[in-house]
Image 1 (tube, rainbow, N blue to C red):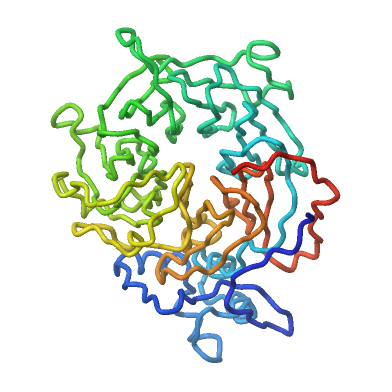
Image 2: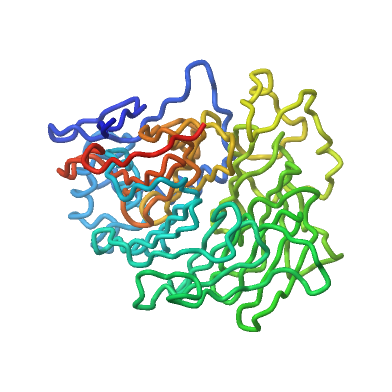
Length: 476
């Protein structure tokens, strides 16, 4: 079956100058009213993605949002900002309406399940990790040419996560093993076979007095590149000091697998974690009152947490849950009481092989402390990931996520609307990544396809799959 133009669930097409332009819709699912999101996050989002109020004073016409590109350009030419250029909010107001929904274009195609897909911080590199022990790094600026093809070492089950260092010189990768491996991305060798063509140094996250093994689900570099934080199958958070080349901290963080961890902001002092115990926790390394005691707990998910993404401000983050929801959190509303998280499930269910029970879809935790909840996607079989859209081009106006139903969903943070649904894949989409500067999104799936989506109107025709299709074994 070949690629078709993506079938998009977008509610409106806006016309500007006679040209049809696909933009974000503001519709929600019929019959479902989205509760008013917290005023502060709403205001912060609007400040980052809304035009300056002076625009309406200087440029005649109706005062309505979104402001058309013609009016925005007219305002810039009249120097309404006093700077002779667009402000960052103006830029986001222009770019955030053009969603990466056109395509898809084929980046790569393998016979192995894709588990990880990530742009580098500057968007020049793209990393994809596969179950077949391969990790590929593509040079985006050179036509998505494979810059490094890494064959993983001490491989168990799959590549569970990867992380690029801030200077983009090194990549770490994890699997169901306590040893994290680090690779020199900047070397001239394209084929990086562990300890054959290149050294893949192993960083042992297990302490000397422990003889059992565990796996690592999540790993992240700190902003300064000096530390790694990891979440593991032994219910713990680990911090590894790269300069000292040793494990510096272990926290017995949860009562079940720690599926996801991330630094809250550039300081590296705050760490967020999410677990199969249904809890999100906040850890402040500056003031550990007692060993393994978090600064606070956030309760609201009815099932385990699969992924967290920080807004980067040390205040807000989102979580994907096996209760088929994304939740937005404000850590100022965290609690110290975990007793309110006692199980409310009165049915047997395992997300690895069962569909989510219909009777559970409208359940709500009685102590739900989240700011907002987003529904529509599916979190089954694997640890599906979700993210804020980029600050530079969208002002973090959207949330996007992979899904078990083979699609990518994009939600409006403030209204909760499903503004786009990208359809191409034939198996679960575990990960996806939005370019930090341009309206380009890459999705990777268990069907082995890595494809990119762009905003409409660039004049380039998508590559038909029958030109590059390979035979593959499809998974249940």
